[in-house]
Length: 88
Image (cartoon, rainbow, N blue to C red):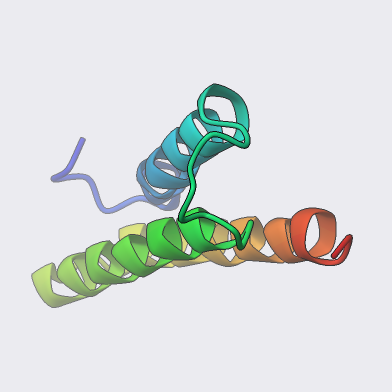
């Protein structure tokens, strides 16, 4: 799948890290991590890692896959901003 230059592949690849961070920090470690007094930090870290993945795919010449990763990453960050950070 990594050799495919497709937006759907980018959407799938881009959803992996935010999905893992949501699972780990939203459900498994809820209110158990001492240094996570800011609720958006784990999601921003997942977004930053996705930016490096986007850069890798653009450098490889897979623009459609990079666009898919960028779309899902920005959509994820918008959802986190609306649902998690606005309640503070």
